Length: 319
Ligand code: MTE
Image (cartoon, rainbow, N blue to C red; front, top):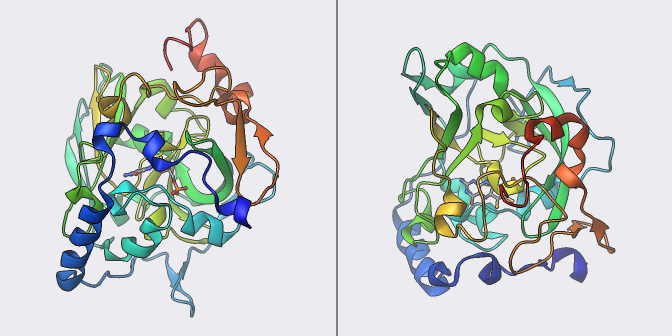
């Protein structure tokens, strides 16, 4: 058990020194906000079924051919060992603090190089899509991994409906940044709001999904409710949580981790055991719940499906 919980790379190592979290400052912010925080509302989309344990089931979820058959991590692992810095930088901070996030009503602004820029209510936006269970490996840049049964639908289906202009070459996603709900953004760990991006062909790949649930239920707030990206062949930080804006661009958009430290984090961030992080190896990983380390696999094991996206590219240079 001791081993299972011990992170391989400490947060202080991952984060650029100048930005290193001042824990005391965060705790003070937490205390102030606790006094005035509004109670979180539970999600209330038409497809939700409320269960007695307070969690919400998502009915009519179909299986997917893209799922791995590997052993799943437990619900507890997946929902209590999180990276969601808007709620604090320790692994258990998001579980403790994310109940403050109000996930309905929720809107997503679609803008940039798109036929009709608009603001969508989330339930209107996701209504056309059948929910699928996608059991994916998630490999964090901190060299741990999990197997998670996400529920969602292909990002490509949403993009097609939004009709980006032919000049759109990239897509950028933005997370909510509301200091009233998110205590962590009172501390400049990152340049808030959290932003991420993909090249358009990556975004259109059938493995890339928008997730609204896991383990058959509505996404817990700490995992990125009400809607987050999941890109299984890239390091976990590309899978941005609680999305409020989608922007189509013709130039590579800024993304949070390279902005924080361009030497250590790149735009592509494909899982690659042969390119080490400047301060630690990416050759192996610790699967939560396992004792021995495993070898990390190129593209997190999704190479057969995605390697062609990068043919001819020097992945050492475009890390
Ligand atoms: N999205 C936002 N908005 N803020 C974050 O701090 N952390 C990223 C990613 N998405 C993060 C985020 C990192 S580093 C990882 S590994 C995954 O979320 C973790 O997802 P999980 O907590 O659901 O396992």
